Length: 178
Ligand SMILES: [Zn+2]
Ligand SMILES: [Zn+2]
Image (tube, rainbow, N blue to C red; front, side, top):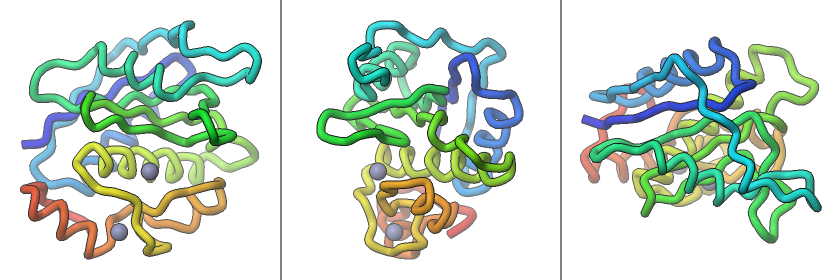
């Protein structure tokens, strides 16, 4: 059983939150997704005023503070985030913390609701893939492909390629969809 604690900050709408839970259940077999009625506060300490962005790593540490034994934590955060050396990131996973964050701000710019939802779902599945031990994949359609822009997010699919799926299977994670 894969136990996921799905959290969100203020600014992430109910339908986005719920649709990510559904996407996780559509892709992974034998998964339990725990949702919270309350959103979590956007923490102040990862904010870098000089850049006007949040430090992604700080956010993932924050996400991990909500964890319980046996759970992976995924936090949807409606902010713009970076890691040193990159202008921005759509998400970051730290497997040793069993926690990841997906940053929705840039995924939402100039896009209709349907595409926005799909982008967030893809990034959620991508970051969980990292938490379960997957690296980036070269297959353009694979959800584990690294995305440098929203166009690249749009190009990949919501599912793992057969190679990534078989790595997950070897580790005991079954998929419904790949
Ligand atoms: Zn990645
Ligand atoms: Zn792949």
